[in-house]
Length: 217
Image (cartoon, rainbow, N blue to C red):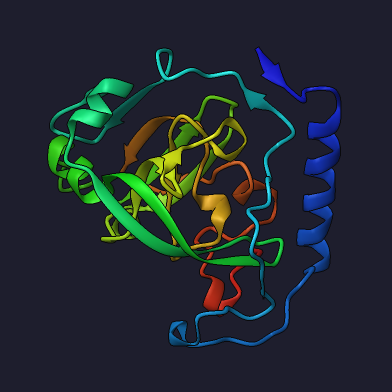
């Protein structure tokens, strides 16, 4: 079952597609990451909830993650398998393309580096497509997924991730706009060539670097 699939999804998509056409929030500036707050962003103390208007009812017992494609070792993890891996706690700033940023967010989970060590991408692997249980997708270059602060996260602020924030398991890619940090992840597909994900096909940038304002394509 899902929560919120009552027409809200289509309205949200149309609004965000319009933002891309209009270049909403673009300042034309760039910043050094050392400045911490990217151009066009403002700091918040809460954690806003953003999704496609649909939140899957997904328990830890039903959650699973497949990693396949151009890898030497395909894996299929259940929640217990995720917890059995070495755990990493990472404190990161996060930046949403809708203009909010939150500092010092503590996440816990399995590092992307550890995941890659387990699956061993083949030499021709260059890109990823991340799939979610709500049908969402987002693409990432393999080299950015392999950053030391990227997590397959099950907890935030010392507690298990709630449903609205992507629980039981989400991706966290702090150096990119937060639409790249897919909620409710179900599959990571390793590819030789780039394919665009859900928002990337709808006018949003293929990379999404906040400090160079890569909001839109």
